[in-house]
Length: 418
Image 1: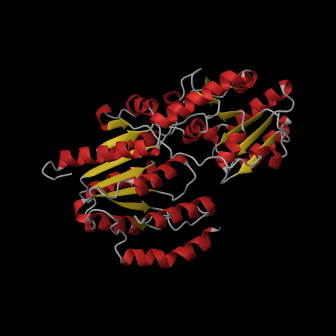
Image 2: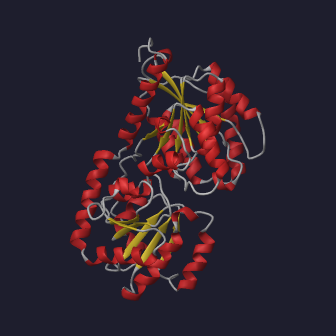
Image 3: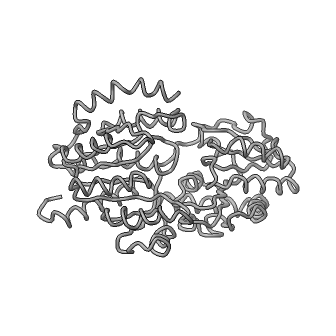
């Protein structure tokens, strides 16, 4: 669906919700007895790790204890890049959840009106916890939250490379970290870089591991037959946005090397992004265009994962990779680059195999190792699934955040019964 049609369909709903002061109580305790929390993110989507997690946090907070509002700064969408099925699905989830919804209709132009509206809303609704996600919302949340007297302000960084961008490091340190009660990191590596690279006071940072919902069970469809892949062909796959961070070019290089030893190898790329055309051209240049299927965004990821022999993450950097967690939940043998938070998820040789980034040969050799020893690969997949179920569920993630909200709010208002 295009951005213009989405905008038109949502305008009346947005106006009506603003007239009702947007936030409305859900079932459970009266609103005045619950902690008023705003989750703030730039884009509404079920695609992209940070956007998905922000949406899940807002919709899964315990309604008996928390009155939840989701603020999306760039809604309705004004470009094709932030519209489409993933945005539509996310909006429908918000509507079904019954939480409050505050769209700010911010564009990339310099404009003050959305932020004035946000400040007024924070004051009027007496928001007690403002939890922002990703750089843009982190910076604005830290500034506006403090200016409007929100008791607890949290910033949540979902990963970046921490290389270059001195202005970005300055804003992280001097604006976001100073303006928030805690600056949350999704991996221990990111938390270390906040201190070592950005020189942020370690006492202001906190590592909170990500989590994902239990995925739907596979339907049992014969995905291989549908895609024209032989039942016994080695099949590997990657789930992710087609952007430089994910290093899909390295994945393609590994497929080219694997093809020399296993001519029938096939690879699925599940996801879309602005690099797709360039990557398709690279696949042709490497002679693997008939071995790699670019599937785009799919609603049947559990079925696709079930068909794989090995799941791959070739990223240059990661935070707490939701794709790797999805592989774990599907009990898939995993080969992943040892970057960012991935070693927090995968112990090499136990839950999968870790390889250096930007090395197609190492990636190909690790995949070949798992393809050659199916029993060991299956055991790693089972271990990964067990660990994910024990440590990295969405319920555990949200409960950790709820406890943090209450702890910080109690330190600001010790007399209030929480």
